[in-house]
Amino acid sequence: MRVEISRTAWKAWIAAMIAVPLVLIAVDLAFTHRYFREPVQDADGNLTTQGMSEQRTDYIWFVGLTVGGGVLLYWSLREITGNRRVVVADAEGLHLSVGSSRTADVFVPWHQVTSIRSTFREDETGPTDYLEVGIHGPTWVPADPRGAVWEHDHLLVDATDWQTPSHVAAGLLQTMLERSRLEEEEDLL
Image (cartoon, rainbow, N blue to C red):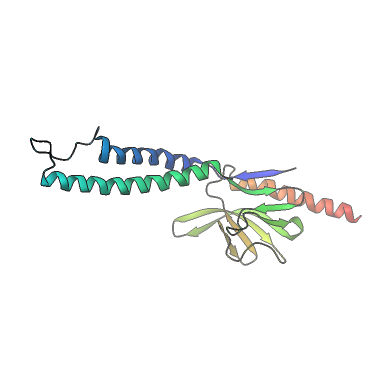
């Protein structure tokens, strides 16, 4: 049996839907002037002093909106097309996406897992949903994991934007943990 839990991509889609209009507004503001009026010109078609000031302002807005929209679009496309798996559980153990930037997944074998449950933790933004994994013994999970926090010997994995609610994921993973313990006992007999 294999269980995969992934993050949702709705935040990335919303960011992409905001980024595209930002870039289009920037182009119209500085170059096409379809929706925003052109800088003020005199009768000969030359820019007036006010028109030159408006043009400089338009270019500043163009740069700001283009950079902001571009960064937002890059992030959203990377999130939409990238790996959104957070937890993968199989017969061997848990693969958690809490490693450093060099190591995306961290493996925790079932014999090191003491318990799995869902929990809430209060922080500066309010209660946050977590998957709590009790771990004993030496582990490859870093001291300062990405997307998780250590609380003594329990690893709290942030579950705020998961496709599967943390209480459902915790139930599935706890069942797999119990099954692995039964298989270990059968192997010893």
